Length: 189
Image 1: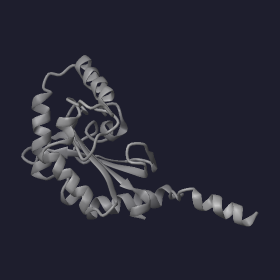
Image 2: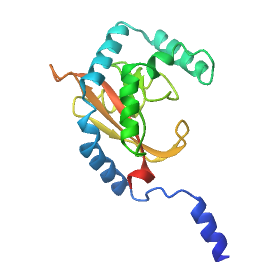
Image 3: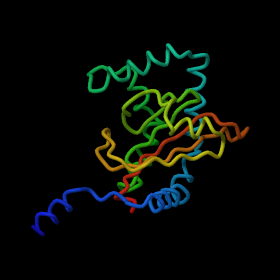
Image 4: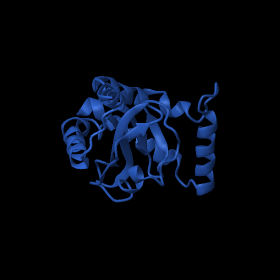
């Protein structure tokens, strides 16, 4: 019986039991690693372009974009997803994932509407405007941070916690968008 219990326990991924330890580790990683590049000109410029591209967008168009994104997941043709996961900014984000040595699982940036601007890989949706990663960062202000709970992320198949924060225009200090960085909790701790 003892071996059965140990085998079952070994098969269940260890997720930090204490939220404070989890949050402290995420904050330490944010301060030591993510802050060095999250406010880069590459990211700021991409968000500015996204805001210009989506100026005057309404809820109906946002729903259309999000629906198109969902329909394209796994499809051969991806005219909505491809511009987000291809190009210089997506390459920049993938380089951050690679440099993190397995700690970062994904990175994506959002414009002032919560729409994806660039991503290291396809996310599960295009619009994040109603999620805490956006509403508790961009929706709160310039210094806002949101730490997500550790959970199984279907798109990355890892136990991930997300660190999200507001991206500001360095010239004005005004919020222009947000970034979310998925962190593999096992790799971090």
